[in-house]
Image (tube, rainbow, N blue to C red):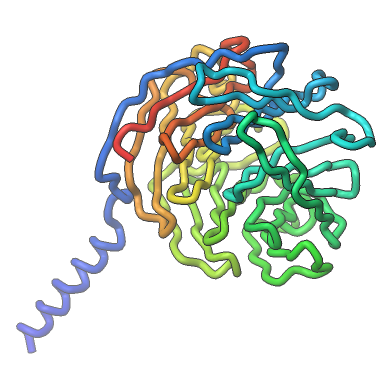
Length: 333
């Protein structure tokens, strides 16, 4: 009996050690060198997306006469066309929002025109051609990620912090997953606050303060939770938000990988154009770590990845350096 006891005790010790093991390990690590993509025309970047070989840049509200700039990534970043104006006529938008998606079309949602969603093809000359228009039957806050041309996932962060899957014709969600505390009035002070990303196979939720990512199918069934050892944010208030360390500040879900930007510093530190040290973590669609990149230059506040060439394009929210996008070549993918 004593022998059996020691065997069981050893198994328990092994099990506890396994549960308390170190962070998920990345099989490879690389350092990335910053390049710059010059922008043409008068630009004020707000969002950026890639439909290879074209990059689509949405300008901020100040550029009312040239909302979208389309660049050719294979021809010295040539500006191929300018599209969109503010207004209510054809090719005009009241308050447009370029949406990330893995559809072949470019998706633009007009946030102040009943969330009308436009699906544009892009021809060889970089010109947008309207393919389809849809309007969500559910009237709500448009924090959404596109799953496919029929489905989207909505983040109900301001009412009941949860993700909800809708069809464009649905008035009620098909699936719901709650992530936050509904009693916290300001969602940005919820330690479970985060951002959702989607493609036709996955919905991914990256936490803003925790070093944690949830991978789910498009019915919000969990596939994997990736969790790293990480000092929690402590008590978050509206007064100390700029002092709280951020975790996954922005991410991009491609067809093949999730690209998650880890800050590890406060918003005040990250906003300094001289800050260096951000890390880009890449996972496969099942949540397995693939590679970790250390950035030797300025990290983007928002970015996209061209998975044809595995090149990251983004911009810093202080628009530094002026009239350029940040470019990183993702080695080893």
